[in-house]
Image 1: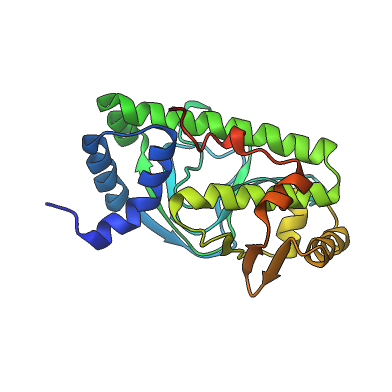
Image 2 (image 1 turned 60 degrees about the vertical axis):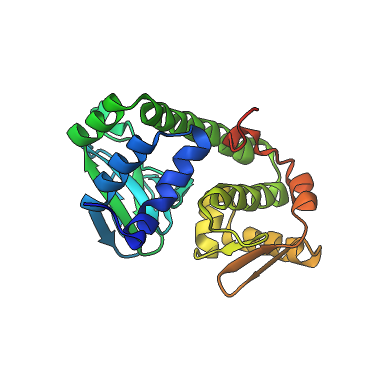
Length: 248
C-alpha cells in the first residue's frame, strides 16, 4: 500500500540524514520508510531508552525529539558524551557488541522506530546504498566523539559552548530543523553543563559572555546565532568532521 504524505513526513528526517551521508536508492528509501513506520514507538522526557549493560537486539532511529548519550560515575556525577537528534540512530550496529557501554536518555518527548536486528540486517543486505549510508553514520559518530574529546580536553569554556552550539545548528540543518540560524533548544543549563564539562555556574557565566558579545540569543527554548561565522571563529569550529558536504 502506498504511503501517505503524512506517513512520509514522519520518516523524512531519517531519509534526509542518510541521503546527506550517502545517496540512497528509491527502492531503499521505500523499504526503509515502511520499516520505520511499522516499528513506531513513543516515549516521554527523562526516560532511559537504553541503559549501560543492556543487550541490544534492535536499531532505534529517531524521528522527533532530542536524546543524549551519557555515562555516570559511582558518585552520581554525569557526563553527556553526545546528543542524538532527529534523523540519527542510537548506534546502528550496537547489536554486534555483547552489551552497550553507555546509557541513552530522552531529553524531550521522543518518537522513534525500533527495528529488530533481523529486519535491519535484511534491509542493508538488500541495498548497498543503504548499508553504506548507515556505515557512514557510524563513522561520523566516531568523528563527533573525537571532536567532543578535543572540546573537553583543549578548548576553554567559551570555545566549548560556542563549538557545541555550532555543531547543533549544523547537525539539525540537514533534517530541516533550522530556520536561518535559529533552532529549538529544549534542554536545560544542567544538560549543557554536563555536555561541556562545566559547572552550572561556569556555564551560566559563559552564556552571559556569548550573549553580551552579541553572538547568540538564547530565549524561550530557542537558540539564535546572530553571526554564525563569528561564532565559528570564536569556537575554532570547522564542520568537516560532520561530513555534511559531498565532494563534487
